[in-house]
Amino acid sequence: MSFLTIILIAFALAMDCFAISISIGVCSRAICIRRMLFVAIMFGLFQGLMPVIGWVSCVFIGSDTASWTKYIAGLLLLFVGAKMIYDSIISKKEEVEQCYHLSFMSVVMLSIATSLDALAVGASFGIMKYPIVEPVLIIGAVSFIMSIVGNIIGVTLGNKLGKKAEILGGVILIALAIKTIL
Image (cartoon, rainbow, N blue to C red; front, side):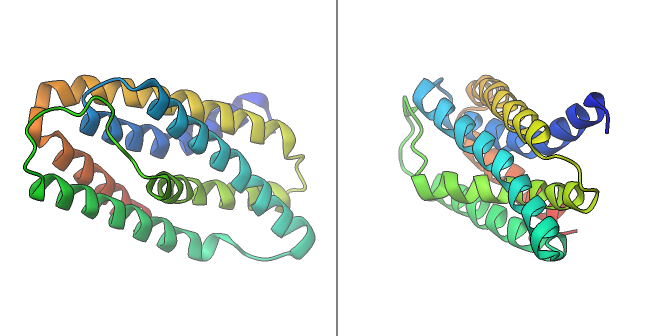
């Protein structure tokens, strides 16, 4: 497998991280370095860890992990997106929060949801008996970078959309959930 192929796989896997980071940025409407780095680190970590789990499961256990992952990812994205929309509708606050709060569990759920496809990619590396270290490092790094870029783009969009930005963020997550399940 060529280096270019691994880079393309990494970008394909990072697109969900990118889209969700846009949603987070849209909702916050303010650059919060701590939140942005936390989300990017979690996305990069999970995107890098899941291929290892998939690789190990195929190389040592021989299981088929790809068949059920899309349903779990879709449900997690659907839940977080619906909660985001619900919170934006019932919220009475008009002012912009300086650092949009995401709970630790929300970030973990989003990290798992975005990385389940990486589990399947890792399983395919295991089936091919391809060494996993280089792809894992590249996938994690690309996901980290794409998360930061997505957050910055989201903040810019959020400032233009105002109060309706959080609903848009939830809609993006629900659309990703539907795409993932189908």
